[in-house]
Image (cartoon, rainbow, N blue to C red; front, side, top):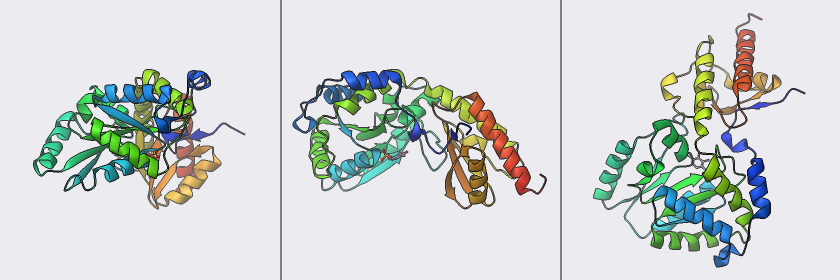
Length: 291
Ligand SMILES: *Cc1c(COP(=O)(O)O)cnc(C)c1O
């Protein structure tokens, strides 16, 4: 069996050896009582990195967004949610200036702004800016350590101290209190310390893959939207194409009957990019009846 080229998502990344070692050695306590030193350290690191007063470790990005929405409800007349990078737009980036402008409009109307920054470090690396510049004007920012940063589990919700205290209570009643969560937070610390800069490699590989696919008749790739680690491809009968790619050891994510998504990550190097491009060539030749 040939090794799989899995381009469905960057969430499939496995923890690094350094993460596994940190997880083994992590001091722990009951985080629901605020007594897990490793979780506390990760939360402090996240808050400092984003330039916010406090942060909260949650099991998933979905729970971070939900906790933010619930902790904001009844506090303000409205909550504007932004996404950077923008997943369904192909991982496109929003600049600090654009973010500032949109936040100013929302704040002018008394609204708060939550930034879904599941892949905000991809945006920062792609733009060559400090991540703080992307989250400065948002009242709260969520980011995932479980995607391209390669930690096994977890997301951080960052914001003001009072807001995070409310979100902490919300996390508990959502079932997100995790006890000795330092075991997984330890991997998040390694992710923040060592895995951010290498995201540039993922962006480079996405670009090369997109360029190769754009040359193949029958595929439509908008290279302008390939700004980070996501490649969107339009193709007739995407489900059949995806199945034939899978037969050749290449897995993609199906978004619609005519659209598929590929995400590069730590386990995709040049050989995998070449193999994926070659599989597309073969499958599209068959689809065009030129085999
Ligand atoms: C992955 C993702 C989420 C949800 O994160 P989970 O940890 O999978 O719940 C939310 N928003 C965006 C933009 C994402 O990419």
